[in-house]
Image 1: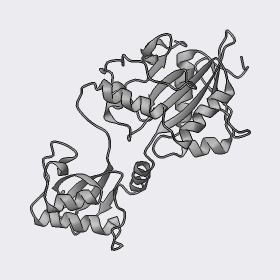
Image 2: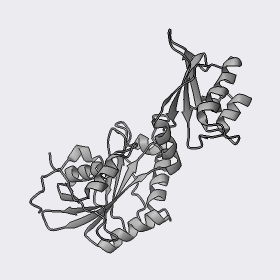
Image 3: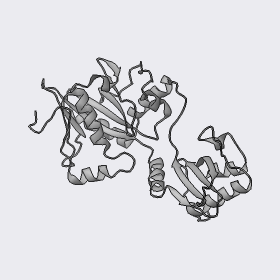
Length: 298
């Protein structure tokens, strides 16, 4: 065991530049560190964040057990890059002053949100102009039963908004002394409080078996590293389907079926990049479980 090791805490061997870059991520600051902490607490192993870029094909994390076993882990976030870019850009100015409007609007946008229209108008211009048309038509969406309400209230204006990447609208009268405004909310996940094991397993199996350069690289690194265990650690993000978020909720049922892992992965972890009720892990000798119910370091 490393002399720097404390049970339940990973040893971070990354460079200062790597840590600064990961900590500066606006959507999930340093998810690798978060994942390593979960693995350290759950396994009791000496967990190292080891990939410092000093050599090719180095797995993100190593695990050293007291009995001499060695494991490796690859960590990634299941993230739609376009959605992340929209969220990060809007996060720099989530509320837009719009004095020409008579209401305070909340605008829910998805990955298809257009920052510029074909005629070159930026969202600072075209969004207030479109909302002014909604106000003129008396469509205020003051009582909104569901966030994607434009889909259930069709019409020419709703259709145009949808084609520009707007999923839902809500508004209220301006407050005394205030003015019109537009608050942007990137589209998140949501759904009924009901387990959907088929959708859950379809997504998990598709994610770990994806034929993409990124996933081929993950599998190759673990295959080359060897070791007694090879862990796939997936960050569940705002772009992950609702069925997966539901499985991470406190009252969600534990999955029953084993994931269809490729040969390079022996263990699987699902950890929310945003606060979630729980994480999930799958081990070949115990199936699915909630790591927080059996921290090895407690």
